[in-house]
Image 1 (cartoon, rainbow, N blue to C red):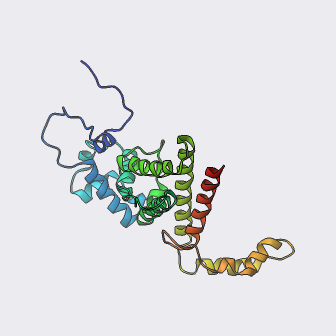
Image 2: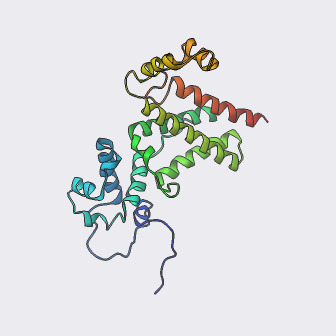
Image 3: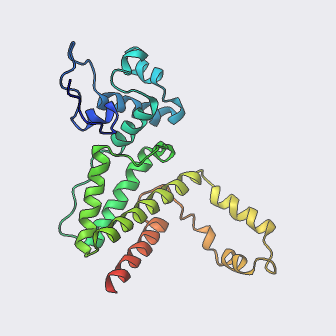
Length: 241
């Protein structure tokens, strides 16, 4: 009997791509991978990533745990589908903006999705995700950077750097999002910093640079826009050369 070539994609990911087993016998499926991922995203948003188990998702959907394994073979596969569901489709680009403005829109939109679903930053997969929404974000990012004139390899490297900046910025903002966290840190610094041992850090502290509380939980403004601007300045300098 002829068999299909091994794709390396899980059953769940094949369904997300519309490549589910068309010849599977039996009644029409009672649910879909996208619906299962949506329920799992709601659970993670509400209770955190550790609360997402196959049993918990099944209870939320009103199904048995074993029935979920017909669609999602493992928790790892479920996490991959969840990331794709949480990111969603990227926003439509504003064609009236130059490439730099479109990159800024892309980065802010990604940051917004990560702030909405912060547990995505804690998902660890053995390889980069390949869900359809993830690839749509990649397609848009490459298309925007191609407008700048970067060749494919440099566009790929640049997009990876921009994505890394967005993720690290959101992670940092979430880590120190508690009210008064910055003020407490500044007070602690003042108790241990001495000008003779740490002259530069002491000077920055005394300048008030640590007191503006710029690490805010938002996808634009302040420190986020400043850092993103530095990254894009570097790309522009590369293009000039």
